[in-house]
Image 1 (cartoon, rainbow, N blue to C red):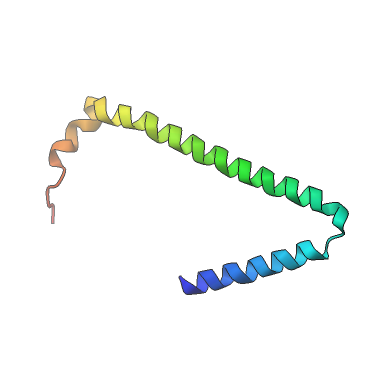
Image 2: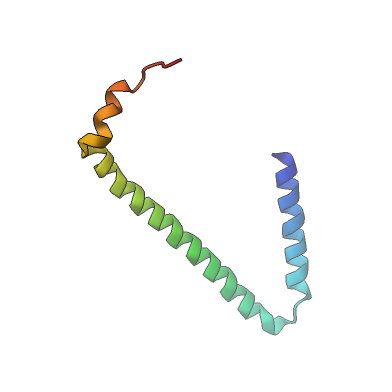
Length: 77
């Protein structure tokens, strides 16, 4: 885990250096790109949330899917 965090710090450092090396007239494009990525991530998160909410009803009420819930908590080993 620590190694992954260290890698992220290094990657962020490199990213910041690369952005700093750009001419200022590119900053707007960088900001637009970052906002695009954030929006895309938010949409994906929202889509997964809606799918999970839809699945709750289906998994709670469909007899074929709930048939094995009687086995919940059983130790099979």
